[in-house]
Image (cartoon, rainbow, N blue to C red; front, side, top):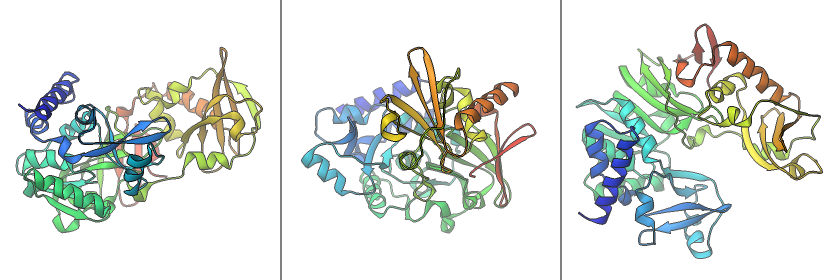
Length: 388
């Protein structure tokens, strides 16, 4: 057995021990489909930038078969790769990656595919996930869409190199792929701010649509059952999953909003921890995203942004309406400064009290409904809009 095969088996055993890979069909797919074919090069974080790692470099193969996100593109610019190889780490925003094997296993198992079912994948990326689908179902039952021509071509070549030729489509994933419809399953490996109704229209009644939410706070997996027409109902899943957004669903940049913020108008202490608000493992994190939609997060120094004479690491909540709240610790105190038209931290604390009154619901307690007119989350009689 070659080195890559051994590394692959170790990765599979780690996923099985973690309890995220249980289906024998998917276990065999992960054992057989070589991830390294799809990620011959990628970026790794180095300080405030990204270093370039390629096939043959020390640690390349072990990193490929670790449970890691492998960033393969920055700023949609292929030139960043050669620049990083030539001059060292570069700055940029990831625009393509090979997802963590853990979340891939979770999503593929949640898809609950059966023999003969047709799957549409939104976001071809490197092609690795499409390769796993091809192994499980047969390439003739797999269609995969990506908006980036370069990524689509390289994925097609990598898939062909290991014997798979699914329908690789260049196009806007928000439209799905109507020419190949209907599908039994739709799987999005990019996050969305709302559910594209085209996905439901192209799914057979009773079929499943699985995607992740593009929400800096309160992201996660959503599983919908398609009803007749562009309607669907489902739930937020307990497992957490976070992907870079579909390009047409990218929102405002938190740092840019904060740079335009005015000075603080109030300053006080708080009893609520930042972890309760921002940690995906906190059950309150999802709820606060419903109560205060549009919240973004960034970090910085007080003195760099709000005119404070202190220079302390601070986490900021910002909103496109210009409101902001900065949170930092000072000794044993949790200090909050706020500015803009709304007091965001006051709203966060109010949401926390409402969450307690509702019985501390977790993310998987919330249902999701999609119609042509409305998309919303619900908890009993309570409703919150999705995508507003």
